[in-house]
Structure formats: C-alpha cells, structure tokens
Amino acid sequence: MVPVKSLVLLEPTPLTLHPAAVYLDSLAPGSKATMTQALNTIAKLLTSDRCDAMTLDWAALRYQHTAAIHSALRRKYAPATANKMLCALRRVLHIAFKLDLIDGQSYQKAVDLPQIKSKTQLRGRALTTDEITALIRVCETDPSLMGARDRALIAILRCGLRRAEVVALRLSDFDPFTGRLQIIQGKGAKDRTVYLPHKEIIAITQWLNRRTRRPGPLLLPIRKGGQLQWKPISPQAILTILQKRAEQAKIIHFSPHDLRRTFCSDLLDAGVDLVTVQQLAGHASPATTAKYDRRGEETKRQAMQKLN
Image (cartoon, rainbow, N blue to C red):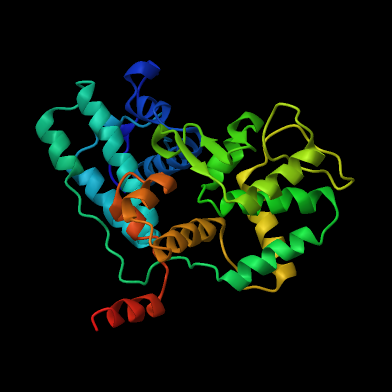
C-alpha cells in the first residue's frame, strides 16, 4: 500500500512511550478490545500484514499514510465502523504528538481527515411493546435456570446498558431495595448509575434467588446440565441468547444494541428531556443520544398536531 520499511519499529519501545500502548491503556476493557482490533487492522493495511498495533511506528505516519488509510477504510467498511477506526488513529497520533514523537505540523496534517459520511438510513431499530412482551414471556415460561437468567438479562439490557457493561456487572453493583444499578468504568472509563423499574427489579431478584448471593459476576454462564459457571458471561453469549429468545418469540431479528436504542426512544417518547436520557445512556453528548431516537413517523405526526 505504501513503503513498509520506514513504518516498522526497529526495536521494542517502552510501553510508556508507545503511542498505541498508552492510548489502549486509557480505555475501558470493552473499548480496549474493539480499538485494539481497529489499530491492528490499520497497521496491517499500511504494511501488507507485516505489522500490528505494537510493531508499527505510529510516529512515522504522515499525511500520505493516513490519507491512504482513510481511502481504504471508506472502501472496506461501513461509515460508522470506518469513522470509529479513524478516531482510534487520530487518538494514537495525538498521543505521539504529546510524547514529542511527532512535530506539530506533521501531526496536524496527518489527522486532517474528513468524516466518512453515510447516505443510508439510521442503523438498527426500536422494538415494539408487543415484541418486548413476547421476549419476556418466552423467558418466564422457561422454568429452567436459563429462563431466569435470560429474563434478568433482558431486564438489564432494557435499561440501556451496552454489552460490555453487562458483562462487567458484579453482584455488588445491584441494589434490590432501590433498583440501583451501578455501571463502573463504562465507555470512556466513566461511571454512571441507572435505576430499574419495579418489574425489572423483581426479574433480577428472582434470578438472584436461584443464583444465590455469592459474590461474583451478576450474570453467569450456565452449562447444559444446569450448572452455574462462576465467571462473567461473554458478549458473544449475550448475542446468542437474544437470537435464541427472538426465534422462540417469533419476532424479527434484533441486536443487543437495539434494546439500547429502544431504551432511548421510549424515554424520549415518555417526555424525558434529552440531557437526562443522555446521562442515563452514558453518552458523551446529547447529539449522540439523538441518533438513537427510533420513535418513527407517528411521533412526528403527533408533534405536528400540536401546532393546532
């Protein structure tokens, strides 16, 4: 893609002086895995698979390299994915600048890349009340330990948590008396608190009655024989569980993140102000929260009737 030799680190760099290592160390566990993969992809594209994030000399990158990456990502990935990867690239170069590994002029030129615009409609969807009810019903009619666990999972996801945040939950993060759920080190290494509705508190409490109050992860994997595994449930397992329950409930496919979109849309539809929804969702900006609004055309029509 571009000359490779000048981009390969000739010798190992101390992690405190390695731009990619410093950047990745600043991230929460869920974001760290995603951005490590993004930086590895960028490094491989630049060097024809010769380098990864730790063996690429990020301080050697100049505008010709980042412009080539911008073009390659625009061709290979969806706009949202490509922009996330470009964000990681900019952050690493910013750290290289702060570490005095790259001069200011070269840095400014290298990061002067436009956002990749999308001409498609908003991704994802909001689930209807009937779909949520059907999902809950298939869990509640399952008498097994998995039924109780999956009902608790849906209760938590309905309150706007990301998959990585669900995986990180501990028993001590849930207060059954107030319904408080404490999210520690969420996206952007930020803590936040959400409060569950009464029905969801009951669902999680019923799961805990079968899980026991032994300290550890709030949600656990379960073997086929019904034996609990005392380790965190994985993000992939969450996706698999929802796919299974959606098939049983006979509803259209949805992603775990669609439950987060549903959470934001439902709160906005209930008249909760955008800033409060932003805080509950853990977004850095209200503009991000607005992108999660999937209330549809009926809400727009009703809003226009108020002009009368």
